[in-house]
Each structure stands twice: as C-alpha cells, then as structure tokens.
Length: 412
Image (tube, rainbow, N blue to C red):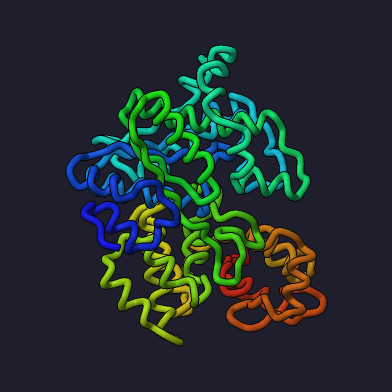
C-alpha cells in the first residue's frame, strides 16, 4: 500500500504496521499537517529492554518526519500494572521506585526523539493522581462496557486460562483510555501507537475521544516481535537484553545482535536500524558466510542508536580485535590474580569465570566445559581438575565462554 504521508510510507515499508484504525484518513491528515502521536511505557524497571525497541523506533520515525512524538511514562498506571500480554498480576511498585526508574529511563528516550525541538516526555501521574474516583467513574466509566473489554484478547486470554484478573487490572484499560483522551484534549494528540497486545486499550481510547471530545482519533499497532524460532525477542539465557549500559555492557549488547539467527537479520535491519531501504535490501540478499557482514552491520547500527557512536565504534574495534585479529584487547572485562594461587590450584577456571561475570553460576561453567563451551587462549579447555596451572607462567590469558563472552585474566 502506498501512502501520501512520508511517515506512514517509512514505517509500512519497514514492517511496523500490524493493525490500524482508519489509516486512510490518518494518511490524509498527516500528508497535510503535522500531528502529535504517543506511545505509553510502563516503568516497571530502571531500564527498558530490547522488547521496547520497536516502539522507540516508531517514536523516532514520527519525530524524524517533524511530527511531535510524546513518550508517555506511566508513573500513574505503573502503580496498577498492565494485564496485557501477562499471565499473572504484576508486582506493585512504590511511587519512589517508579520515580527512580523514570529518571534512569529518560536518557534512553533522548537517543530516539529530539527533546530540544518538538517532542516531549510526559508522566501520566501528573493527571491520574488528581482524579476524583467518583467523578471519574460517572463521566468515563459509563462510556466503556465490560462486554467489549471481555472481547479483547489481552483480557479474554487470561480468563480463558482461568488465571486471576483483579479489579485493579480491569481499571488499567479505563485509565489508559483516559490517557489518550487527556492527551487529545490538552496536547491535540490524535494518534496512539503500541504493540499488538495494546489493541484493546487503543480502541477504548479512540472510543472515549469520539464520545466525549467529539473528535476523530487513530491507532496503529506493531507486530509482536519474536525470534525466528518463536522465542521472545530480547530474552536470553542470561536474562533480558537491557538498553541502559549500567545493566549490560555495550560489548555484550553488540554481541547479542551480532549473534542473532540468520533468518532474523533482514527483518531486524528494517525494524531496528536507520539504514536506507535499498541498502537493507542488498544486505538482505547475502547468504552463507557473507551474512556475517550483515550481522556485524546490524550490531553496529543498533548499538550506535542505543548507546551512541563512540560506544559503537569502540565495541566494533574490540570485536574485530578479539574475533578476527586474535588480539587480546585490554578493554575486555579483566581481573588480576596471584601467580602463586594459580600454581597451587587455589584459583581455578571456575573462580576466573565467576570473577569475570561471564556466566551466572559455577555449575553452568562445569556444564559448559563438558560440552566444549569454554576456550582458553582460543583452545578448548578440557582439564578435569579445573586448574589453570599450565597457564601460570603467562602474563595474561583470554577466557571465552561460547562465541559471545570473553574476559582476560592477568597473572601477577
């Protein structure tokens, strides 16, 4: 489908559009005027992870084409918890915890939208905290029916599985609809975007705006992003892949993208980079060993967006030194330990990997050794006694866990 709006053409070509509300009318509006659109983010942690990246890129492209992007942080709604896409009630956070999380996450938004120009970060606590519950129910509760809410997949799925859904969580949909109504009334916001699990919430907001503000509003959802094997995007054996560098190093972040499945490379280039479409098309045609070049470009481009060009350049150099030149790069994670303790086997491969934080548990290290998953100086580590005695006369050794995690043990 060809659109008149540059923004809609861009996100459609890149695969962002899954569902939409009156997109033809939205296209006409955006081709003639600049609009305001928003995406809401629950603040359940002190960092967003790569599962939020598709929404951040949507905000970026809206801002890029000179529309106003509103990053709505859920200081109010996070106090309740969104039931969408969840099998159980979320942990309830305190106001202090949520405020601390917001402070940490605001830096991430500034990498995707221009906060010095037109786009903004807004906290829905500013208006939700002042609501009079009785008045709110009288004016807005009467506009959204339980009958309709029960048809939405986010609610229906939980009930079909006979998993608890509290009255607190039922209120979440009403509050999110109110957010869209409030932004429409006070910020002239006409578009809400979100993941496909937000479809019901977006529809409810559009209904409120039409019934109370007597205006038209629009919605776009993006597809649920999973890996080609069906696993959830951004989840690894070690946990979530966070966007803040305090939670995961830029090298580990880079390596996550460098090691994605071959079948995911093309789709991820379209969604998570700003490369021109014709360049992505060429990279997508690469096969076999050549696809590693496309993976390297994917990893570099995503790291550049999320962590900045300096971090991207640095980790690209580290990765090239480590995996191509076989140079032991001194910027890799490193520790120092006494030669005498290594010679006496008081400091083993288990201790080294634990101190370097390359693996979560010592039992996992033992399992990896048995399955040929550990290398020392590029050779498989096979010692049954777990010792590093044979390396004790060296000044430093390189320890690799799988293809992704590498550290240096300096022997003093």
